[in-house]
Image (cartoon, rainbow, N blue to C red):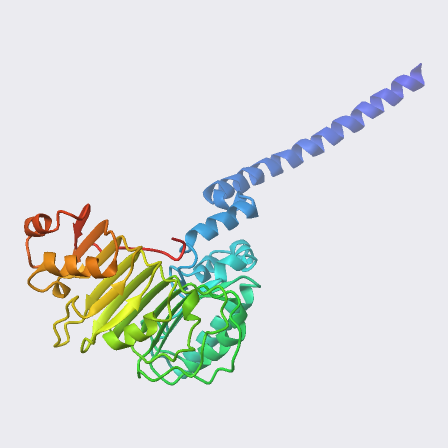
Length: 357
């Protein structure tokens, strides 16, 4: 009995000593825990799961295929400057880096090299995703950037190329994912490469220069914008684009007579640069039986809007449902009275369409 009592007393003493140690440790740990919680509460976003942070990052950039700048506040690169955790997450999301605008202002040599490395880094981070790229758009076209992007042409999906210099020679190649092309060559020379092997290409915007018959697979286009082209140039191209649904033309120079047959065309927009030549609808004979939306600058209607439009509709064989007059000088009431046979009449707001229509 005595031995058992002595053992229990010893054990209680041991337990009390252990409790004393643990209470001392708790007195140390509780303040430390409070400090950590206070720090976490200051940055609660860091407690979010990586999957949610990834979704937030994707909302930070423009909706694809709109492009992000390579640098600056609106670039996904900015997300990597916050902390190591965010940098690791951003680098692991290829969708963040798949749409890039390579607008390149004048730079020093060292900055140019850094800029080129940044372009290559984005392309690597984008993984195998399709690409949306703006080259030279409102900036300087750089051959070294073009040559860095060209090996990824099999991933090009939405491409803008504005070049103010000679484009490097491009061997014949396929563009298996290309859906939309915006191309401008400032010296107006015929481009030295083509986009003929692009089975998904449906939308194109072409500026200035002369385009050979084989530059694009014209017959598969459903949306085409021709900027600063003569009437003859437009007519020559439109004869090959027999499946167009939407077409926008900005006309320059003299107007020649010529027929254009576009049986599937639903929307047509006509504008002009007013470059010393007064345009009008007369020379145009569009056979467009499916047309139901027409956007036209006032200059095309001359002094007899009703007569010009009635003649255009009669020649085209269409049943026009919507008409938008751009840059008008005649009053709205006068138009509405003269064109009462058109169900919807608007002024000054251009039609918008996408390649998904």
